[in-house]
Length: 316
Ligand code: RIB
Ligand code: CA
Image 1 (spheres, rainbow, N blue to C red):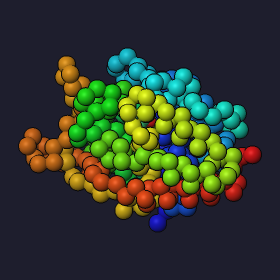
Image 2 (cartoon, helix red, strand yellow):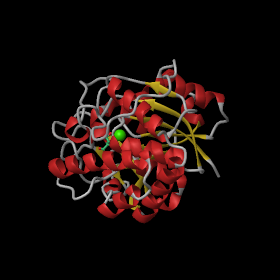
Image 3 (tube, rainbow, N blue to C red):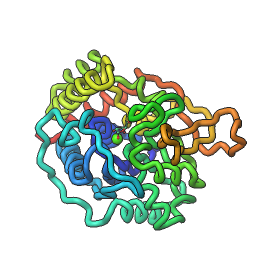
């Protein structure tokens, strides 16, 4: 069954791979790309999204710019991991399409309200500012969205503080609103995405496709690998956001466990923590399916296939 989705992203090296998988897999109907400030400023991540569309030959998907600042807190960005452009590594292709005139929030609301209830998945791979705003501007989307499959949080440790993952920490109030919403949520956290590393053999398989797109992907993974090595001591970069789209391509890509997830908003040391209760210790209703394990071979096989498919028509 084809899964219809909107990706709300902050490209971002791993967001770029998520877009490519979504566009290159026949099981996915990529209905829109919306951008949110996160890895870099809204201007930079939006430009990056258009560059990814250009190199991947994505010309028929609306791209709309979203929130440039979090709901409440000061903005944080991640140049140490993603570079000054937010997508350092390759020369970024010139955009080939114009932005949709609507704001991200309006595009999300329009698509969800215009289509049958229960048919569109929201796949946020950046801070949750746009998704939280959309819920508030049009509360009816909550009962109509099929599932929110978000990259963020973790039930063990963070990556931006000992307890907080970047997407959640960047806008914890937005994240709390999304987890508290009466819609199905899948949390794809670091516990699982840290297994999704682009090891040397995977990069070699991508390089062997030998297309402008595969070369672009190798260049972004190479840069991503250097920063993840230098900053976080990884032998290969974890391509976090890819895992969210992969779940829609083939649910077998990772298992989940039901839990209550609440976002810490006031902890001096723990703000942005996704407090994950699998065992009803907090006496709270389970509100989230939490990703627990990963079939890494399946993840990368489907991703490499998507790059091959798009390479047959990718921009020269
Ligand atoms: O913590 C990793 C997440 O933050 C990824 O989505 C990455 O792209 C950044 O947005
Ligand atoms: Ca991201």
